Amino acid sequence: MFSHVADRISGETSVLVATNAGNWLQNSGQMLRSLVAHDSGRIELPATYVISDAFELGTGTEPAATHQNPFTALGQIVRNAQEIVRHQT
Image (cartoon, rainbow, N blue to C red; front, side):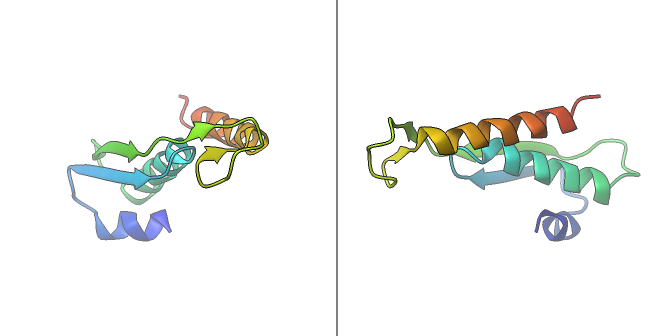
């Protein structure tokens, strides 16, 4: 999906990734990787900004509409760490 976005925004100077809580790091990282792959010859990539909502971490008994299950959060932490490692130089 992000590769299609990168195709359409080629030449832009900034990008805003609007996403939900928990996935903001993964989504912004995927967007940045798509921009790098698409515009590999550019000297400077577009500035990438992220906006997200907030989501309370629950104990496992709250409804999913208001709180994130702590066990689901563990998976997101690992995926976020993987995305950070992908961007290290």
